[in-house]
Image (cartoon, rainbow, N blue to C red; front, side, top):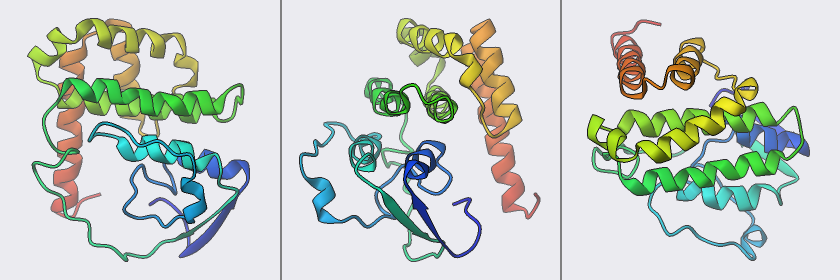
Length: 200
């Protein structure tokens, strides 16, 4: 992830901040080890998309200290038909509630709210990027509600990538969802292509 050095320890409020910002703690289970006591009174999601976030949201509030080692200890195989890479399903939008829980965890903390809302916005854009034009039309009412909520809280939106930020804010103002999502998807693919050929 984006941490400096090979080993770091995160304590107290910084644990929740690291989770919301996705800097040192990604939204998946495969690269983590937990004390078994953290799983007491935990519910499991009934979906195959973002179920890790649902689980970690419940565990992270119990964590007071977290250690992180920046070492490649696990081989992660990407499959074209995995839940992350598959095409859009209606349940993907419902899974956004799992990410919205972070906003509830931030409560009235003005330092954490931008992290939570930005994570929610980035995940929303990621789901919209998976949609075909027909999906956007069929789910337009629900998408508009999500965008309305983000627009109301736009002062908290601070995506790390300035281009993503610009595309999101333009989407919130113009509601040109399909065109702007294709633009962002094209930029993501272009950045990936540059990495493959060795560019920055």
